[in-house]
Length: 354
Ligand SMILES: [Fe+2]
Image (cartoon, rainbow, N blue to C red; front, side, top):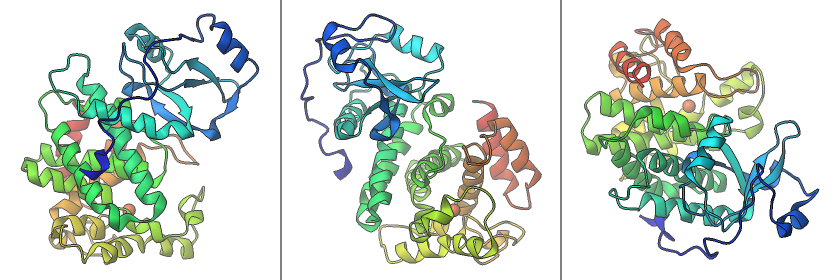
């Protein structure tokens, strides 16, 4: 598992020295250092509060966004442990994200990988914490792979992530509600792909697929939008409606992704069809070919349900995310036309039961 390299690295900063909280008076040194020094979020990375382990220091300065100004203030110094009551207080205040300096990203990833590799018997590492860590690690690998556009070299790492994800989501203690608490819902391609992969894996498990198939389906979800790497980013990020020419460009992404991956012998037909057919519809009204239901691979039908659900429940420049219930209602209108009714019904029972 190449992407897990660095797991055994020890943090370079000792765990306990200082405490600095917004709610309390910071130590003098921090007051001096950070007085009047509020930072814009552009230089910082968001991290999920759900990945923070009580009673252990992350080894990173943690910053919190001021609601009124969108600027960052130091929340906690690098060496001081967080306690459960601190995390509870953040959650009670609706604070789900903190920030770290961009150059601390590698150390945060190292911390997450140690969490993921910790023993299942470790009482402090709850299933929710592991799911949170997994989400951030998957995001990081996709962000790096998609960002560098060197995805072909990264497919092996992505497949390892699919395996790890399947291992966690098929455990008895895994709860879908835990997952919803940690997912991000911005509209970056890697965020979308991460969420779709989780949904595909959960849906595949609900439909009774084997563990090995769940691994492959989850990996297919991570790769399904690979072809978007070759679409002009200005089109993908355009707020509002696309014109005909732009839409025609976007509709090329399943074919482009398929062409990139078709030669890979480590991907199976179902995974390639998830890439190629996830925008097809049962009634033949989809793209790139307009194939009808009987010609669509079952894994592509799973991906289609997960893909549209994710799009409806994520933030868009022109609208707020829909609730999960509302998203399912909208998808049900297209049951039998766009979506396979049996798969959609299974997804509905998973979502509404979470
Ligand atoms: Fe897509």
